[in-house]
Image 1 (tube, rainbow, N blue to C red):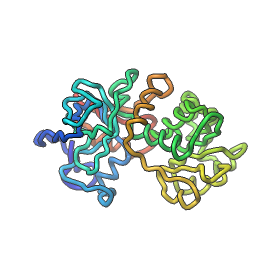
Image 2 (cartoon, rainbow, N blue to C red):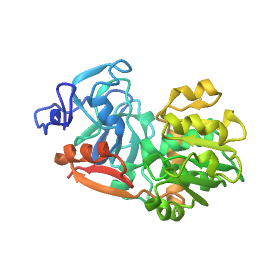
Image 3 (cartoon, helix red, strand yellow):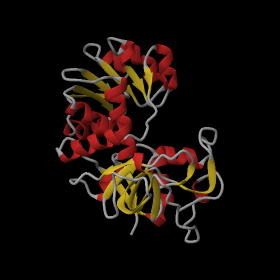
Length: 304
């Protein structure tokens, strides 16, 4: 699937006339089994990131991938043809995304697929999983016994964050609509609060040790009242968190972190619920489902 201009989801087209992608010295060519769909895909398609990366049309969307190595460049030492891999394929430019049969991935963007996850599950994990992991371990330094508040905990990043924080030994409090409270308790959340029932700072029995903001706006503005130390507020959606003394997190590809996500998955500490898997040719419907919001679990496209 690809598009030749920025716009709404109607610019997406099924294409069979594009050349096979190039395999550079540090490139791993992956035959795709599944590709996750994320809100950032809509932002890129609309042109909102045109100032952040060079864009080259036609653009194949998608950054999450799981598949099998088809070929490797001469400088690649970590992977070989036939290896099952997953990763967050964020290149230095925007052109060769993951909603395709073949994807050229820099080797730094991949790791070996968790054995316990299907290709569909593994294809849904990287971007959201890395975002949660890097926010919790680097920006917030979450450890044993910490009380951690995760906003929008039933979303893609939030659900991973709940599980990862539990695996790190934290007492996790999640915010979500009432219909998702059981979903979060099953993931290990010790407490669940209703985000629609007033400011979260007024619902907490006492301030927490760390806050992960996945909402921004009024939710982030309330965060200093939710936490003991404002330096332990992290947001992945609102850079103004830096102004209040917290940390803004912009996810990056990182092999070590992918390895840790795989380890957690294989240890039974991290599961990946799938909201719906669409065939590749129905990517428009997948984009629409993600754009509507309030999806419980991840949306994925699969490639036959």
